Image (cartoon, rainbow, N blue to C red; front, side, top):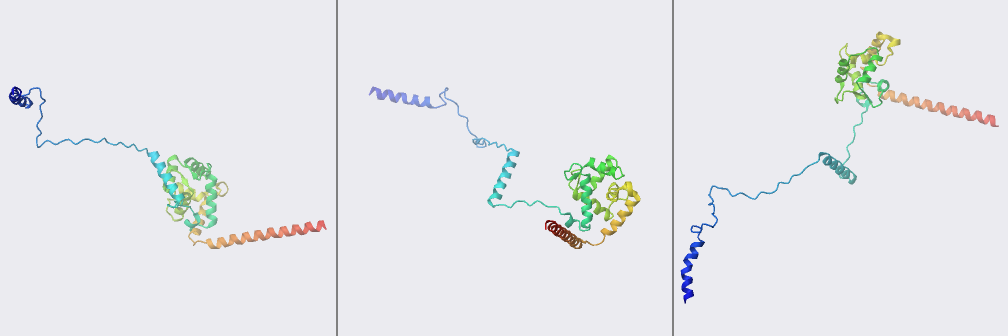
Length: 241
């Protein structure tokens, strides 16, 4: 009985101690206002470092595997055919221009750079300043690599034949003098030759006739070799008998 009475007396006191208003040691709770936003837990940002070189190599290897598996077609490299693109020139003229190009391509890299063009113009008897040489290349430099490819070299003669070059420009001098030995023909001879050549370029393409002529020439050469071999065998058999 005494213990029950003591418990009843202590119950209000215990309840008061549990109330934070009456318990100075209890931590205070900060009331949450309706306007306050509850912060969401932040996720760790995933940082991905992409190596450009590795990514490019991976793409190339992936494409190569696709080509090997038959899932992709390989890119076809564009082949430059001067006879098909420059139909206004005869086959002989294109071959002559190719020989000139190769002659002055001292580096044998398929291009005529600034220094090679300088030596070329000096050899032709029409030296140019450094700025003049750069302007010559710039006029036909379609890929902006500051040098002349074989195709760009042919463009010089196309523009000359079409009258698109200035009379006193370096490119016009190159077109006039490139196929003439200035030391023996002279500049006037080179000019007359070039003017005759321009007139010839205005005539229609003669590809088929030239190809047939080349084929006939090869046949004649083959027949001649055959006849010489037959004559040699006949002579040899005469000595052996």
